[in-house]
Amino acid sequence: MGADTAEVTFRSFQPSDAEAFRVLNEAWITREFALEDEDRRVLGDPQGVFVDTGGDVLMAVAGDRPVGCVALLWHDAQTLEVCKMTVAETHRGTGLGRALLEAAIARCRALGAAHIYLESGRKLTPAISLYRSLGFRELADGEGHPSPYARCDIRMMLDLAD
Image 1 (cartoon, rainbow, N blue to C red):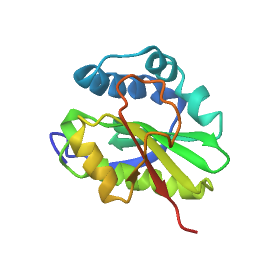
Image 2: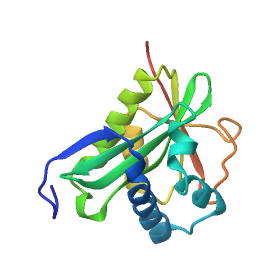
Image 3: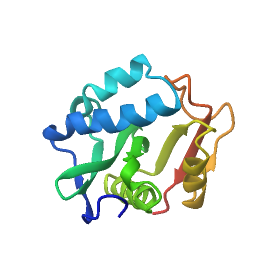
């Protein structure tokens, strides 16, 4: 895959992944937007924000090197948010983003979610296309949750069938 030919596997977050999670996410956020206070808060404590609250963080790993991640955050008893999803530059265009999102959807099902929510920026057209291709639908302005991020101008939902 890409510049790194090691096979990519998925696993749950380990405390030693905190730095890689932060670095991977800061790379895409600062390339496309700017870091915001909420970014700093969640990137500084992925264990506490996502894992300890009943969600999860999935890591995509090539050999022993994290090359992608996605976090799952509960909004209410039925809705998990897919957030902080990224793939390292070396692995873009390989299908890893799709595989990572498919793994996240499977994990949401396993955690008992009925809905998956996400927020994004319309300028991230490859990401929006990916979400739509996996069944996410755009929400109207009054739907969804208020975003803590200035960059988010689209909200989407995937309803999981039982």
